[in-house]
Length: 458
Image (cartoon, rainbow, N blue to C red; front, side, top):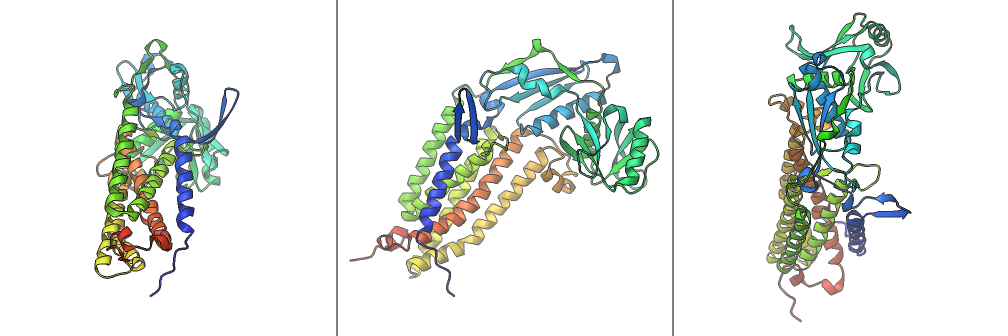
């Protein structure tokens, strides 16, 4: 069976694309108009680094009403809104603690990449504003049915006695009951929004005329309480104020030069890997080095946000570990393929036959290993991300057995590992194969020795 040949220019086209991606992902593209920076493509300098690398801010929030009126559930709800707003800003490396006795919420989060003046008050200002909770028709956030504490009195996590199913009970005010009754007669679905984020979209089974209703679904104890907290947070009749005397700037735990040291060490390690690959596998080693560069550039692009419309992902030390591990997986994919190519030369194959058979025979092992890591990454992101995220919902039947725990540093590790493996499949499997098949068609490199075979005798 004949396979379609890869065109000669393919290697140069892919090389040009990888070099362009590498340059733009590392350095970005921007211009200045006076002191104003216009960003067209984000670079590595636009990455939001975690508290453990760049430092950040610590703020203490307190409700702006008398302590006697505040319950533990109120404080849990207020904590939920702060966590939701942090995640909405793509800040995963945060710490939020609740002091029930003193009615305080302590929040720690990293600086944004473009914050150079370290204005702590500006950094936390929007986190404590009263949330705008809305019940809307279908999933149209502009079709508002109910809003805030004037319509929604309370939400509580509960269990249906008949089925043992976890639910969220809603209690409406008098005006809210009238509005909700009219809405459930009109709509088949009602979505719940906090600020501009949809937090639930339950289906309407029948018109509800009382001042209570409940939301059912694939809830466990944690997710039901989480949704109730978010609804209560959005309907709190108070805002959170910040004690400016307790604002603190957090120094990075790894030291001010830690990031530079990591970058230098990483660059040396990457260069050493490329040299070893070239010495061991010759021309395929060169191709592998280019593919690894493309893999790294793709990961940086996904972390920085690349395009201005997307927020930078918070990169922590565990996140950097995910990058390093995925690069190792990329090296492993190339090694498996190149060793298979060497074996094909020993079996008497030609250059074209050895390359084709080598990649074909290694594909299953490479894909199996990468798919396994993808599953692990998704589970980590589902278990340690926010319960209302898409991945958490997909894995909710499994996670309900163990509960969820929002841990940003582990989520960061899962994210970087996931995107690293995806780019390994693109660069290490597809791009490297195309480049090697393409360059092997040029006469000046038609020597088996360059691919791991025996040198042609002239």
